[in-house]
Length: 267
Length: 278
Image (cartoon, rainbow over all chains, first blue to last red; front, side, top):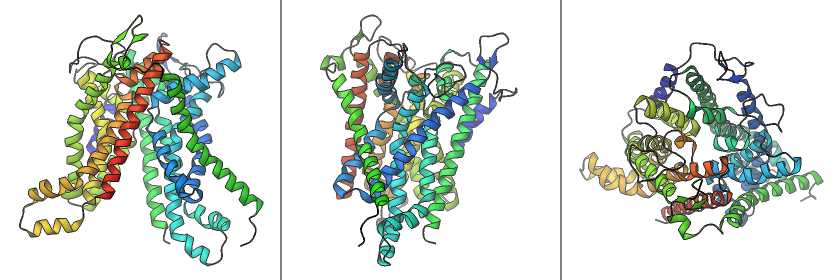
């Protein structure tokens, strides 16, 4: 199984361009002479979209996690669980379509522009997509801590609110961080929804309301029309390689956080 | 018990609001698709070919359904032996705990890799390097890779969950290891593996990014061939929307995908309940 990963990265590395990858300022204009392959706009797009989605999904997701773990009456929790599973099971392309006929259309109507694609729309839909993952991971972390400490703390006369703020939240912190990292990894790699909603314009975005082209959208747009082995092809694959590294690093971080969470639970 | 402080009440209210949003979002999304798509969703939509000009403005989505199903079948041909076999190895034969935990971490990392990267890998390895071209075979292999880590993780857990007493009882009867695996372990773990399989298939059916460059085309006639491209449900939806061909059909296609997956996941949940009962 490790070999699978090595094969994947190794293959990409065999195609790595020897030239400098990180021309952040250069524009993306593969048809110019000489062609220029700056990926700066794509990175900015990716981080903007991911940032927007996290800003929305993290408070809401952790809120839902707390609700599911502690406050929800059992009957409500029994509805919430399949509802979140349903949300997690909807394919990305359907989310993209949904965002297209709701947020994008609303923004177009409101602003009077012919089309309403924006990084903000992509970020909002992305937030809905990563919400169930953040919610269920944080609910699991909170539930584990709560079971361990609830009776001991309540037995000492600590109030519910104090128990929650002083004990549960602190003990569950690594678990909550793992939930956020999971959301970040998913948001960074999500393709279809941002491809359909971000506007897919290869220019440096001016703000959250402008159109842009996150890295995954760039890959999905350009790969189909790229000759294998050309400099552009190698550039796309090295960009993919960087994305892979980022996501793998995040996943390692999640594993480490989870391990820490379970080790420190009983200190 | 003292009276609750106002801050606590506010906090409680916010958390309730979050929970209600969490329950309302899926209802909103699915309800929206139902209201706008149900009118178009007829039997002939499911069993007819795309018609009209450009194709997709009339007719149905039969080739896309068949293409998605064929891709999954090809993918399962490699994902089932590798996934269940790998899970069996990790749970039963793995020589050291250390190797087991490293392999497990690697597979989990693989499961977290974004699907677009599977698509790029498939394009570079199968389509270009192995000269398969954009084809059912290449796309099926990529989807097999997408399903593999999910299947491996769930089958390892399924094998590990079979109680140790069974193992000792079976081996103490003087049977050899293969009899233990084929007559006790596999039947005992079957339901859980099946649930994992449903999960993996449900994930793979809906993902467009891995097959976008490896298997799918917007429209084609003729049957399914391993060396020919196919239409798939998620890419059909993508093309309908991004080329602004037909929003009516896009609603109906999205509805087919979501309802199909909901039925699939419902089956997985029913399996889990059956598992808990037995």
